[in-house]
Image 1 (tube, rainbow, N blue to C red):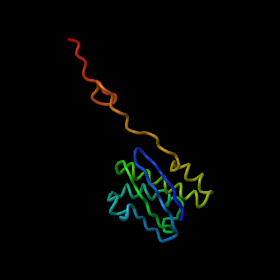
Image 2 (cartoon, one colour):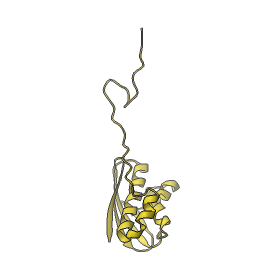
Image 3 (cartoon, rainbow, N blue to C red):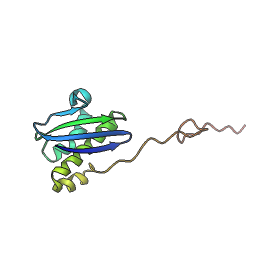
Image 4 (spheres, one colour):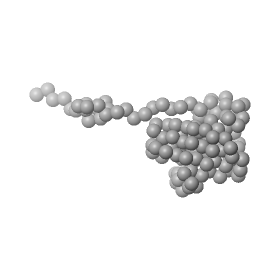
Amino acid sequence: MINAIGRRKSAVARVYLTEGSGKITINKVDIDKYFPSAILQYVVRQPLQLLDVAEKYDIKANLDGGGFTGQSQALRMAIARALVKINAEDKKNLKDHGFLTRDSRKVERKKPGQPKARRRFQFSKR
């Protein structure tokens, strides 16, 4: 069993990879139920499809924090890191597609005296 961690925005994904038939379980729920959107399922499976190992490993994941987009991208990163632990020669291919790079963009905090992070209240000259 190989484990890895992936993060994106405020989402954290812990992944456990075992030899198997390609079943993906997230928080004890099947991927089709957890991510009903086909796009998010595609995002999660990208590193597996890139290396043609989608039917080779079973994945158990614990997802915590963030929204569905951040969670799916955190899970993608965790899967890619776990695949590198299994076979180091895949690292260059995964890195070229950007699956191993931590996307550090987060929501900027709201400042006092402003309605949002950068938006200012309307200025009135008179």
